[in-house]
Length: 388
Image (cartoon, rainbow, N blue to C red; front, side, top):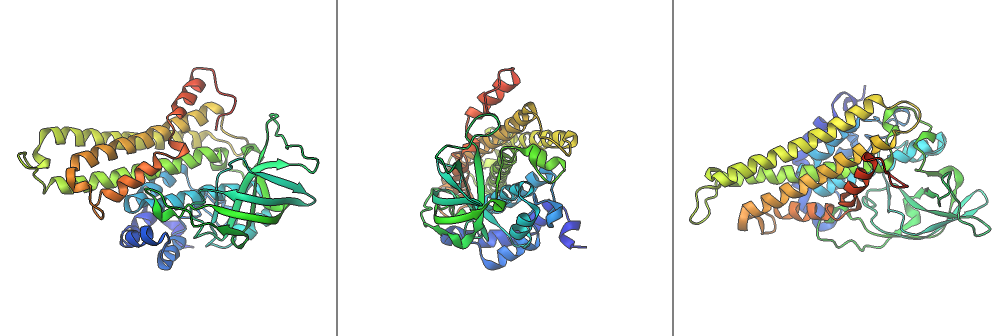
């Protein structure tokens, strides 16, 4: 039996912690993961946690997945981010024809990267789609073996293809990584090591068999409760795991600092009653946010069937728990950064990169405060027209 299958994802993630920390500076500077680290991540199967078992994956319980992402983020935010994005991408596999899914994901080192739909269209042609355009934010594209692109479908007569709800459908096409040209334009404040650069595709034909839509979880080919969750919901779980892990690492670094630092005119930080109280509140905020999200994921996973998708109210609870966890991580990171004082402002300090990373996370679409409004509408009986 594969040893990785007998060890929980969290334990596998924790075992790689020292190796990830040792590579963190290089990852940020070069925007590349060292080859030995990538090999270790693949041996630990951490990029295939959500892949169907039929393809050699694990169909990991989402609460166990959350814990593994959080653990990796404690050591480096960019590695955790690309790990969760890669796992989110494998969720397309249950919607692909089996032969196509095996072609893409049969390699244990397979990684798919793509950027979000941003107004692009895919031209329907005989036997498939003609792909041309530029997509941004392709996290993990430098580790990728395949790329993808999302867009609305323009039919041969110029009409836009509609889904069952009468709205423009969004379709995903997949193609070997060599068909995309990376643009090298990733120069952000944080999460630099993700290399989430834009990519351009020119006149690439993608056969129908290498395309799918993410809009219909009920149409998936692989059974099992994991795939009853919408892709966007599980994507948000990954973002929450990164936020919780970065904040937890800053808390740990602050505890070490507090044992040594006595600000001018003040007691040692660890002996300051105000610091003690706020540190305890921060610990409770992180722990309760993680526990709430894990509880929601476990409760829904336990009742999700092999067919069909989880209902809108369940999706709302996943979204609420994820948004709460992301917000908790940002709030705790902010308090920790302030409480550390000038010790937090220097490059190379245990706070500085994580502070930049978590505030890059806070700007991502999954971190929007508007999610709380949408969840409130669902819970109060007035759901928006579209809810993921």
